Image (cartoon, rainbow, N blue to C red; front, side):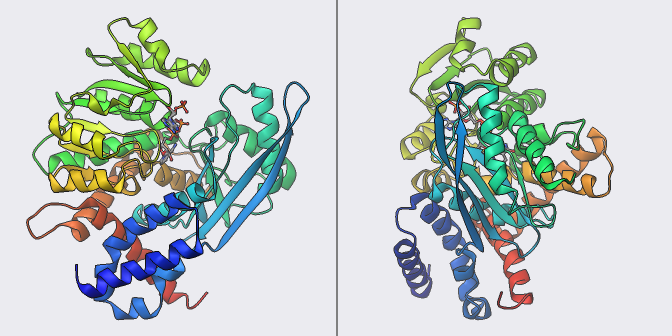
Length: 451
Ligand code: NDP
């Protein structure tokens, strides 16, 4: 790295941290992109003069609002709602809504920032945004979740629309929550439009949207593995999480011939040395999506599996790791364990699950390592396909959507190779994804003038 680039990054980060104090996740996400993009900027003084990167880190708009609601005991509860509308250069803001007790402005901004580049990579016309609340649906009744969603949407509907901002699900926001949010939007706005994606199959949802993030991550991993003449066949896979992304990543990896041996939640993980099969996975779907239970119960039902409380699955020997739970869930110690145990491919299903120190370890050992903004883009890409189907009032078949998803994941992989291949032939997927996403948005911003 040149002295110029080093100074540029240092000055940029100093200013960013001073201007956005107490937002460590946002700082982390910006630094990762900046480290890839700054050397490129040095060769492109025009983009430097245009202060494109400085503009990109400033959200176009941040909305923060009170969400009052009443619980089943009649007690008043107050949560905080957010929508960060980060960048609309290439299309309406698009990005999920997260309901989790950890949600704060830093997490919203990091997710919205990542979303800008991810959406650009999909090749579809979508800007980047993200929203959510520090409300946790866990342990709440359906009626409480509905009342919360209705109150949240009563404010949010003022700021979104099919051509303005199109939210979707994320942690804590699945089919049930999208249903309640959409119902209230439709009622208040008196319009039926594709303003949310991830909708139910009988009311505008795209086939394969629930599967898309997990399946897309596996398609991306297939492309990565192929660069080394490998495939999922016969490989042992560790997956974290047991929600939407983890469930479908497990299903696709299994169907591609892999043995999936772990799943987790925020209380611990299960290790099934025999691997999951279709019947066991069906049980996980029911446990998590219908009974809303904990992953620990898997080990009660299948005694050959072990449950490890308060631990993450990265100490289990595997060939391929797929973090599909949350940010910063693989740290340097975890990364060392994975490398020591022979893991050679890490494909992110979650957003920013790997810390910068852990990424450095993977890259120095030349692992196949892909950042979420590339490998989990199948979810938002299929949301984009849902928007298209809603606009043209059509519903595509599962096969049609799957074909689009396959092509998009393969195009993202090609973009990573184009911008990320290093002199020794190693594919730096972080660099490739960041530069490809950045360039698309940067060029659109330049062409649209100083807005
Ligand atoms: P879900 O809510 O369906 O599942 C989340 C899973 O992660 C649960 O098993 C949850 O456990 C676990 N988890 C959440 N927070 C933590 C934590 N702090 N520590 C350990 N485990 C945790 O969410 P999704 O599957 O939709 O999302 C998972 C990841 O994928 C997120 O990073 C999300 O941003 C990303 N993503 C999702 C997309 C989508 O289409 N859904 C698209 C692209 C990215 P518990 O039940 O204990 O909370």
